[in-house]
Amino acid sequence: MTHTPLTFPLSNSFANLPDDFYAQVHPTPLHNPVELIHFNHRSAELLDLEPAQYDPDELIAIFSGNQPLNDAANIAMRYAGHQFGHFVPQLGDGRAIMLGETTNQRGEKWEIQLKGSGMTPFSRMGDGRAVLRSTIREYLCSEAMFALGIATTRALCITGSEDKVYRERIETAAVLTRLAPSHVRFGSLEYFYYRDKHEQLKQLIDYVIEQHYPELAGADNPILALLDEVIKRTAKLIAQWQSVGFCHGVMNTDNMSILGLTLDYGPYGFLDGYNPRHICNHTDPHGRYAYDQQPQIALWNLACLAQTLLPFISEDAAKESLNRYWHLFNADYQQIMANKLGFEQFNETSTKLTDALLKLMQLSQTDFTRVFRALCNVESNSDQSDTRLRDMFVDREGFDHWLSDYRAALKQHARADAERQSEMKLVNPKYVLRNYLAQAAIEKAEQEKDYSEIDNLMQVLQKPFDEWPQFEHYAAQPPQWAGQIEVSCSS
Ligand code: AMP
Ligand code: MG
Image (cartoon, rainbow, N blue to C red; front, side, top):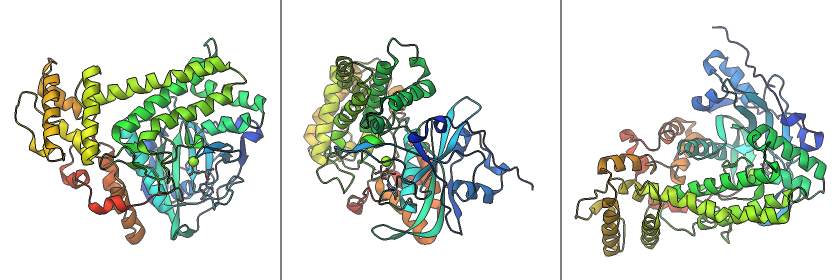
């Protein structure tokens, strides 16, 4: 069979910006043998890429950075950022190189980035590489988040090699092909603002509006409108994170997307037992980024973003925008939680029920995902307690009271149980990427070069609201050792 050479029509709009927005740098090849670890056909559709048409070796060579892509811009983006509350004036893509941006048949723009593709001028003390472990974690989770309906960067494939990478132990190098309409971060604007380069700052803002928020260009004050829109998207994003028990782990401003996407999957985690103080990153001892801190940290980060816009908007206007954050976040959060309980619209009752349930869950460290999924089976007319649910709580009488209040509230709604239950199953996932599940896939991949577990998880996580009888064990109560897994930034 003859294959067509792989090319993309690349527009490279970011690369058309002035030189100080990025550094041009070629990927450093991985050494042979380089193999394809996994390929995501769903993401391939975003690029109108039909992999069967191409020579598999060519796909591997291009997406490992070993063979140049036609017209690739090859750029590492420059940015700064507040890391754990402290400003770092120079960060940038230290291990990611953007090949370019392509537009698919639906008119959507996608930047293609190789993460782990070698050193760049921004690598600082790093080696420019990503380990297989961390690429698997990002690959699976970005797809899982997308399937949960949460805005995120996407991932096309993982390529890997035997090249050694030194972390806490010796690991092997891999490259993740990441896709996003834009990888611009809050920190990209901070870079120019703190250098007093207001002309470049304005150019970057104009670029973001023109390319990604064209509908704002006609607003009275497009820059203020941009701030409002980023606040709105970020509030929604964090409300969604909270509603599935997702902890990002490193909410530095350089990991906050200007498009409101979940960006940079490092030491993230999903809650198992409900502990609002849960810290998923073991290099965050004070819990700056603990689960329950995420909403207010997002606001802190948005204030950093607003700061960078002050050369162009008034301080009062920026403050007014930021002051709307809590209202937006609470409205989104309470609405999603009401839906999770089977109510169409949030009101005082649904909010009280949510709060009371979370208190009971906290007391028992009830599994976050399992309890909401189990609630989908509650029958409003029964006066029996549901033993499966009841057994998840230490305070069983407390739960009985809650259940009776819950049923009373459900009865006020003229909705049939069956309809409500099936709708609840569309917002309460049965499957999330628990750390221990990712860990099992990683160990099989590392030790046996067996990628079947990545495959299984990918399949299930792409439809996390469905029943998967053959993968029921992925929805089981996590084992004791799951709580011992430690994840940190060093990946
Ligand atoms: P992160 O904590 O992954 O968001 O990364 C923070 C900064 O460190 C970013 O500028 C990254 O590009 C950079 N970085 C992280 N890991 C590496 C690495 N292995 N080599 C070079 N730069 C890195
Ligand atoms: Mg980052």
